[in-house]
Image (cartoon, rainbow, N blue to C red):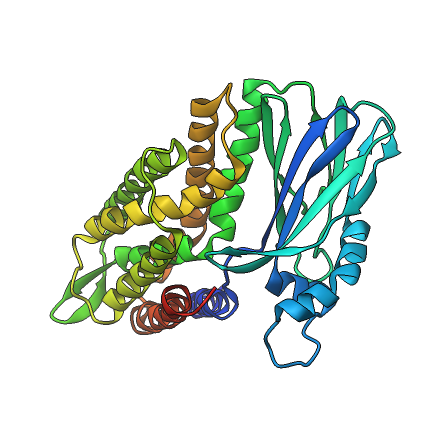
Length: 372
């Protein structure tokens, strides 16, 4: 692949991310096991319900409570086709109650209470979750499974829709593995966090001289810059993620998500109109503290198992770092290879950053000023 072609690939990736990026499509499945019965709820974003079954009856682009309520039988029928519980090889009879609306920071969710009756006392539970598989393959279900004092979590969906859970007990290390997976998925699906980090890393292979971007002559300065930014971001969000997950400190989710969007705008515009060039790690640390609260939002929803709280917290944070490192290793070698090309210096960095800033500005307006 030529350098020009590689540059076009990188520009295209940024443009695609900017055009298609959205808040992660997640469903929230909470289950409590009591003998042979399951009780709990499934929450799906209203935008996902519209995507799945089309509830906007008048086509005005808005889903009202009346439209959502009238579509409940269709929604229940849809979920019954894409969510199954099985114990000892036999399906559990699943029923839904009356839906309600739950407001989250990224919009309204349809909240469906559910009950399921299995043939015998549940010791091992198989769950199949393929909601939105046909319309949004990136969708995942975040499971919280409670049996007495035992709490398990998992990311449902994807290439392996069936997962099996030992209800009568889960080892500390199995819980850690589940939280590690959840952390990886959260950073990969949290496109806003990645765009913030990429906005800070794109200029890492360049130097600012005489009002122009110039390529670094050697790999060491670029590597040092990348390590400083990633380390500062990691330390900062690890601090606030831990504080929030352990119920030591909380911030309103609307404030947190709005400031996260604003941080992306600032980091991206700094590449278009450079002000901070050599100390981007300070930006990464300062705003990384707020991003930590954003990471914690999903962890708080999932909860931490009482017997392995610290281990699960560390595993979740490690999952975030693994997912983050994978993205950095995928993008930055290509950026380094292209650093001497004008298409990178005058195309990818300024115009890619401008696209990111525009998208983040839309997010900021939505999160800060529009009703949920």
